[in-house]
Image (tube, rainbow over all chains, first blue to last red):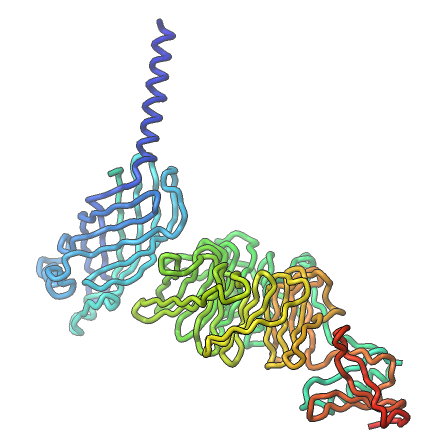
Amino acid sequence: MLHGSILRCLVLFFLISGLTSHAFSQSETMSTATGRIHFTSDAPMEVIEATSSATRGVLHVARRTFAFTLPVNSFNGFNNALQKDHFNENYLESEKYPEATYSGRIIEQVDLTIPGTYDIRAKGNLVIHGIPRERIIRCKLIVKPDEIKVVSTFTVRLGDHHIQVPRIVHQKIAEEIHVDLQFTLKPL
Amino acid sequence: MVEKGIINVSRRIRWVLFLMWGIPFMLGAQQSPHRNYVLPDPFQRTPIEHILQSTSGLIWLGTPAGLFTFDGHEYSRWSRPDSLDEPSAVSALFEDPTGLIWVGYADGHICQWKNRFQGLTLWSPEEGLPQARITGFAYATGNFWIATYGEGVYVWRNKRLYQFGVDDGLPNPEIYCIAADAKHRIWVGTDDGLTELQFFGDDQKRIRHVRPERFPDQIVQTLRPDAKGNLWLGFFEGQIVKYTVASDQIEVLPTIPDQYPISCLLHLEDQELWAGTEGGDLWRYSFRGKRWTRGIPEATTPGGIIRDLIMDRENNVWVASQPSGLFSFYRPVEFIPSSGISVQATLEDSDGQIWAGTPAGLYRLVHDQETGLYWPRHAQSLAKENVLS
């Protein structure tokens, strides 16, 4: 009787673990809707920081392709409300260009079904302010059985995306913006 | 008795050669126009695979045991920064227009050498470094190009790194060779032939393939631009092709005997093309005679592998070979067998023919089509004259 019970438990255990691993390997698409992006403009006369947790996107594990989009007006945490207005209305023109996107492919031929930490480079088209630029962005991927965490830091030059800053505020807004991000992708 | 004489292949220094030929004759000695070099202990058996002469005059040597320089007297070995594993094979060497030395490694790292005090420093662009073997560098019109075996080509412009990959239309990510031609065009050789790459300031890429079926083989292993804007291509199956870019013309050279893969080429002032092979030693093609002859038989080994060829500022050809090692060869002066005649005077005439004066008359050196060697031919009218000058 006891033997039968243990056997049933073992069969159930292997069945579940088998199904789980099968489910993960079959889950070719991982996604997020709450990706966090933070930027810092470190200019001589002012430091401006803001954060958004509204990045949506998907990663196709087998093809190593990805696409992410960020509502530009979702950034919060500016030094004051007027600064946020200027960010949206004057510089990023978020009504005209409501989203920033990044889509492309992972250069390294990594197997993202195997848990581990991978330093990879993403190559894609970064569109900000309606201006696309090819970018290679270094990322750390932490692959776990049920999620992939993406961590990265990179820079964005305002000039690359035709974001014009009036001369009078050159000392308050940096030409090169530092960006750091953290996404947790779950099976779709 | 002098077994070998020296002839001058340049008219401008004819009189110098005249003296040089006379001296060994008088001394009854043999001189070799090549010189061997051996890395210091414990690297004596380390093969040298890449050679560069920088504008400073230093000779740079890339080996599986790392980077060496040679200043004519001493060797120096340059280690990578402590953060990187040692040793790693040097797989590419380049000097950019600012005098900065770029060193590519088999593990994808790239180091820069600025000066003797700083040594090698790791190049760390924001975009990260390739994780594939660096196979070459090139520079043209503000763009710095990096070829890899497996990740296509990268281009560094305005402090940003961009990639030309298969997704951009590159036929193959495994790049064997890269070079900028005299018109500042960038060319790469792959298993799928020859490709021209262009990159513009607004991130625009343009890729143009030269249809591989036009070539005798698809695999472009090495390419060398000449000063006229032409490209000399060496193929895996042993063929060599001159590609005239302006007219899109392809000229296939006669093949080297046994058709070994071509590993490196050196184009010398419209006179000669030198070709290194993988397993077939070193060969020289005379544009005037339209024929191949063994490169430097007295210095290389039949069946040897030639890794790299360069010409330094003093007209020495440097050859990195296995198993013969590294040697340099003073090209304007070379030995020609003189068949035992006692040469007293030489002259290169306006047609480029070489004449030798001997106690037994005047000889003219000609090429023997069958043996591929130069032999003196007797000038009948002066057969019994003692020609002194």
